[in-house]
Image (cartoon, rainbow, N blue to C red; front, side, top):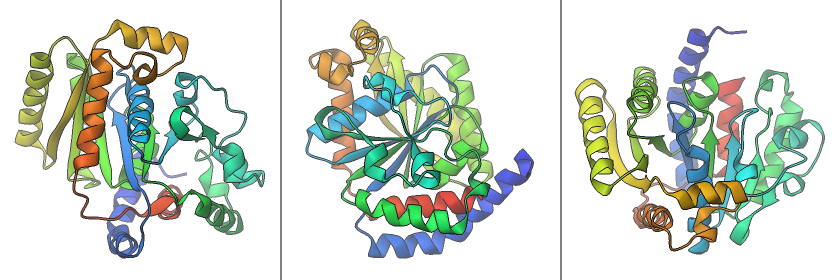
Amino acid sequence: MLDQAAALRKLAKEAKEKEVEEKELEQSSKGPKIITVTSGKGGVGKSNFVVNLSIALQMRGKKVLIFDADVGMGNDDVLMGFLPKYDVKDVIFNNMEIEDVIIEGPYGVRLLPGGSGFTAIEDISKEKRDKFLRKLASLENLDYIIMDTGAGVSRNVLGFIACSEELIVITTPEPTSLTDAYCLLKVINHFKIKTSAKVVINKIMSFKEGMGTYNKFNNTVSKFLDIKLDYLGALSEDKKLIEAVRKQKPFVISFPNAEVSKEINDIATKILGEKNKKKGTGAQGLFKKLFSIFS
């Protein structure tokens, strides 16, 4: 087993070697855009953001798949009011079909639970990998795959980031949250995994606080790291959000007129308004890269 540092060096090398292959895939594929959402620490509302953003995109006519990549700790299903019986490892090891594992949520948003599918990826034979990749063909009719990773810096998190076309980092105005988000970006920069990221400031008390927090964070990152940041938006500290979590019904549905729902819709509009120069690599391209990195 590689130690953490060696594993991260291998990850960086793999990411670099995949650049040519990724460009070829982008030119030939019409697959979904792959977005990784992560954070420097837990408790910043990352999964809530992923679930509600996905629903907001789906409500606008886009087809979205959430891949809950928070290995062993995912809770996207809970936020959507489900308790899955199966996850991606059942497709790989137990010969189940993708559609038997995927959960369909509000407005048709689909969720693929990651479970512990990538904790022992080195034990997956080439035959099982190839069979799994063939099964992924049924997922190609998508516009977005949004990966919800675990929090913090780990081989898993950095691997999922390396496999995405776009990175969104969630933080809050709290100093500890900002420090941890900076540390995550520092590692991403050190291993040259990404050169840009979008930022969402969660749990703000006012618009001014959101902009001020981002500007200070961006100034620090610009000064010390070679990563370009873009401000995607902010979400208010809203009591309706807490109530929605307790009801296990996403706030964009249960409280569509709440301030936080308007804000998540604004973020969805920004994402849809982006001119994508690149085509997505698709579900098969994504998991091919994941297998390569985690092997």
